[in-house]
Image (tube, rainbow, N blue to C red; front, top):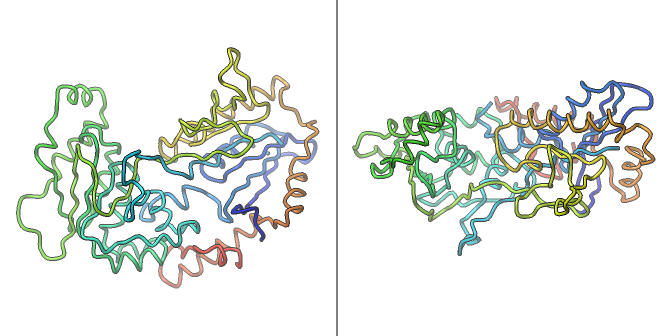
Length: 397
């Protein structure tokens, strides 16, 4: 397969009717894209959906973002968030500071971060508190013998086996009541085998505002209670024991993994709000110009997932997000805004464009060959799969 710059594509065609279908193209094959495709097919009898992606492997966050130990000519934009937010502080780009997204992609075998090569020889690690930070901390602290039974990338497992890191600092700029995680996520990291937990007593002192916040938010109250009960009794750790330090109201130092959020990237020719990191929209309809008194929509252009609302929520959140976007599409179909008589060339036009640029398409059938090969290699190592992490080997298969 050739490339358009750094872009490679995987496509799959879904159809519910053989003649004169409404054609919809979903850009991005992550949870939001697949949820949207599924709901479109269920909601409309005459529809043809194409799903395309930059990578030769589908499923987005499910494949490259979830920690390994957690075992259609109208267009819907669902290409997610592939960049990172910035702290905006001096030294943010110094050596030894990584975006948690990059680190997660590294241990999940994403080909773009195969060669990240993070320094795991430092004595301490600082990770800004958040959902992804908890995942990263758990991967750094969990016994590698347990990780070896997951689909973690082999290069990451090898690096973790040689890691000298024994202390991980989860550093938050705010307090424990504002910790951006769920009780389930917190219990998972607290449950790592033979792990010593440290929290300064002063960091657990609450204010009247904190008490009101916990009274109004059951999840935050439960997270605070778990943190309060998690502290290991004061005694010297035994040799080699791993330690997790929750540090609140602080800034990080040493090896740092920024986990302050993902950020979507703009695509030439598409509306984009650089400040919010989203495509401007109302309920999933893309706005051509949101600055005018009468908002104008981009006809036939929709958005869902993180690109629509920002990098918030869990994978299941995309289900409800897709339903909202589908409601806009269905409404436009009912009103005649979208029809199957579009003069646009649709899939044939896309394939002709790719062919004119000498770009071969990686079909879903080709992905299934990659899938089978990864599972075969994983079976040899008693793992669910052994991910292919280099562009060359992915395309060779």
